[in-house]
Image 1 (tube, helix red, strand yellow):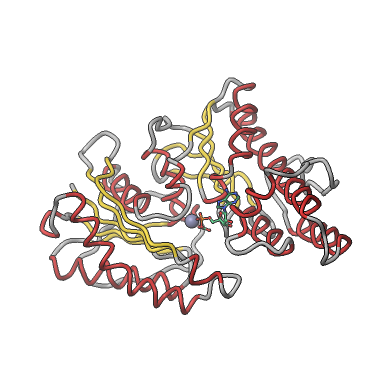
Image 2 (cartoon, rainbow, N blue to C red):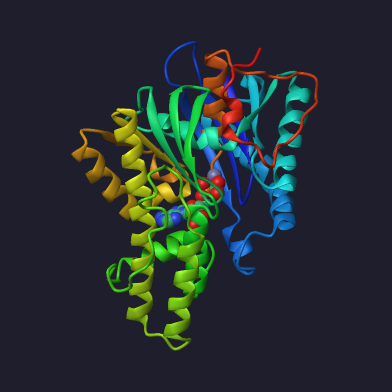
Length: 348
Ligand code: KG4
Ligand code: ZN
């Protein structure tokens, strides 16, 4: 079975083709991505209407590129998958509309995929796919969650952020430091030159005794510190504040993820979502997990942030596990807000 997947939930247009058999891990045949980062950078963040319009321009050429790379044609596609949510409503509608129209034209079924399920399963595209069950740390621009994953479609929420997401904390702090959008990678680059112990920033909910997160207070502390330093701050102080901010976010993420591992008795941790590309986070998680006799599984670095491969993969795995409700009626909807736990129950 060949699954063509479209991702368009935010500021990346991703298309990919995956090959799946009745059993075994699906194989990525080809993928193509267009990031809108440059377009949105002028505005300091994602402009939803511009995002939708750009997805319209990019999706078809990217799909052509993917087919060409794989050596297949549209006639070889058995299922067209798209991101149904969560994400920006207009951006989601572009991908969904396109996928469903393509499915109708080809006489092939379509399947709407949960964006976070895509992130969560993306380590299966890596060299060392995890076995079930595992703990998943989902850290993206909009979500920070710890999940217990028993199998495809079997997700239990253990804890999540009560305010800002980890990616948001990176992005907002980066803005306060005068760094461009997207802030996470920029802050991480600057942090490499700084002293992480230079500024004492809060580690919210570190000792809360549960697996919830909170990053809003950290952002306020960074703001106060940035104000204190003033507009003529020297480059070293900026790097020190960036390093201190990264350390505060990473400390909390690592402590909670290791706590979840300990409490569950599970030996496998999966890290997914854009913040999972952070190298400091990876180093600390690897060391912490190793001390517990556990192992951390990541998606390939390029597939940490949004991409079409994870959407095609999630669709293929759902079909493999009898959980997919593919449609042929040309109808679709999008779910801009869509809790991952809603996927927990098998579909009839
Ligand atoms: O998963 P993703 O691509 O999109 C969403 O679904 O939200 O995650 C984007 C988030 C942004 O907040 C971005 O700043 C953050 O991931 N990010 C990073 C790094 N690369 C991306 N944060 C910290 N360090 C990085 N290297
Ligand atoms: Zn994402």
